[in-house]
Length: 541
Image 1 (cartoon, rainbow, N blue to C red):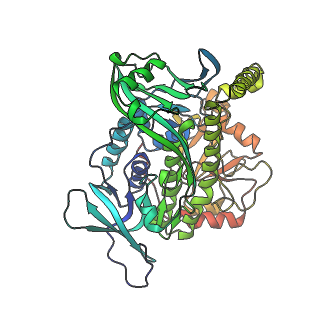
Image 2: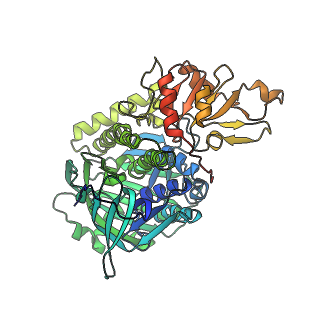
Image 3: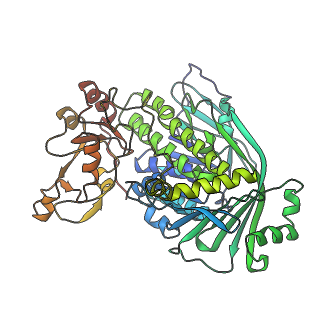
């Protein structure tokens, strides 16, 4: 239950309590630790969950993890060269690559063994003395007032209940979130009744990390499924459970042998780790926060697995939320800044859910006539050069843009305004002519980036907004890059500015563009200055 009483708040233990230590919670803990925010993570399981629930992440998550200084280590056990095929029987009617990142400067899609990903994220928080972990506890109750939230915890090993109090709570405790239920927030949506069966195995061979992977959607009307080799020799195959079959039957040796044989896999040549049945859910919480408690990841939204967006969506959530918590806690920004979290993030989740559903419908067609039509239409589209390039480069996936209505962006926007979109991340060189990624220069802080014709407004500089000065490529050719200036030798940001008819961008800590030099007003300057304050971030990359 929640309460909002007017009495005195109990003493604070930390600033932020995170419930759940999966990829979303662990990313949030790293983001808050990087900002020096006192944080405690509460997790029921003492060790990393062994089952490989997620297998993929995209460029948006990778850029966040790069900013945390963890992505290079993650890549050591990831596969970024992935080819995605849609097959009906022995015929492939569509193939695409998923490595393109569309200006993000990191691989577009990577596949991994989830326990290994979580290991890197959990080890990452060991760098931060302000972050602690409480394993072996369930959150069973909470209360909040105008200043704090108190969570009651129960140990899995027995003993008296404990309480922890923080200024804010982030619930990253999955689709069955206990925190969401305690808050009384509904999770409307629909449940897809069609059951599926998942087999997780490890092959007798060890697939090299740098080997290309072939992810296959089995678009057969008689038995749709997914076949995904993963790094480190892991392999997952998933099948629809047909009428007349049960999960219990499929889990027998006979059932497993038969299913694997459908994919050409010899039961005697692999080690089966786990198998289980599941169904799909498509749900979004009616609201993503209540008082001082925020929902993130599956606690806020559940989407079908076909687009591989579960982990990345949770990472997007906390990347959006944590810099705002930093502004409120460290820079004394008005707490109303936190109200922009849901309106900025929900539109992207809605678009990706619809995209994932479209892929699922493409794979699970059951009518033979519709299947033939699908195959023929896609093959014809692939022969059209422009459309074929878009499809094969995964260009149909919605680009990550934040909702600007109700979000923290310039109130007015001119034609072609870039507000609500990522600033692209090229390699840039400074006066020492050593190439670095742009995000290294942005350093997780409010930054004005522009050419000399669009210098930072004085009031922003006085408020603490950093400035990155751009030079043209000719400065590299003549070795005349001034100290503190940078050259995007491939003109990536310059082209983005030309598209926006701009000469400078004001970039938020999460790499999204607040406005351009064409949009900014005196009101915007004052508004941004109020959230920048005296907060300074440390780059741990």
